[in-house]
Image 1 (spheres, helix red, strand yellow):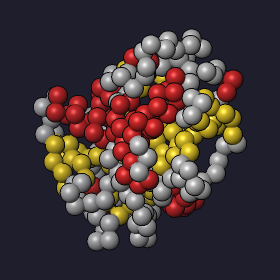
Image 2 (tube, helix red, strand yellow; image 1 turned 90 degrees about the vertical axis):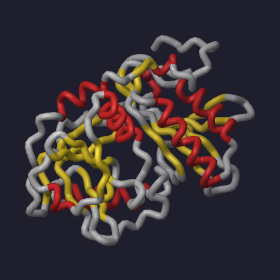
Image 3 (cartoon, one colour; image 1 turned 180 degrees about the horizontal axis):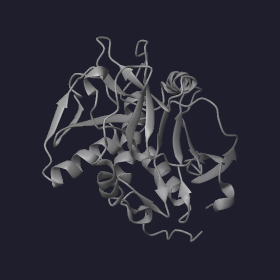
Length: 279
């Protein structure tokens, strides 16, 4: 087990020994997943673990019980105090698949976001999995930052808005919440987007799925959402005539989303017979 002094460390999991060994950060990865941990609490932990497990099984035929054993051990290494953004990794390029835990402190959370719409093709090979396209997505996000934006939104071949390099997109028209149509677009199964849509159902908020072009969001309240930042309303569309709309709903819905955070050590993914260390 590890304490806060291990911030920034990357650990390789040995299934045979049931232990972790420190390794250098960085290097190639094939599947990843991350989530915000605030004083031991996480929003929708099981959904993140399920997504990672499914990706490992689908792309590399890793037995689910192997992935589950790694995840149980990895979760127990996350400190119970502080703000963390751990990354679960599978590397399968060099022989036997290997699991890693990168225990990172959480970066500052943004309240709003400036977005740039990527003007090239969506070159992701596996849009529904986090990891295989990480290098290309990082390049696109870097291009957005060079233009004064925080995030880049991707478009389909026919110009429809898909999602961001690290975010999912939601928007409002009057009292209706809109989400991209997963039946028509190649989307990552966003845990945060799903959580927000469940909140909408609980509050009887009408939800519609569609595939707009970026310019069709002119003047609308638009959100970029993910596990780190939660809900960030778009405050500027960089390099376009699209105008960001007012954002009267964002704060209330961010509060509702944050209220879903549960004790990470009480989630079913963790073996409760092993008491977490207070760190």
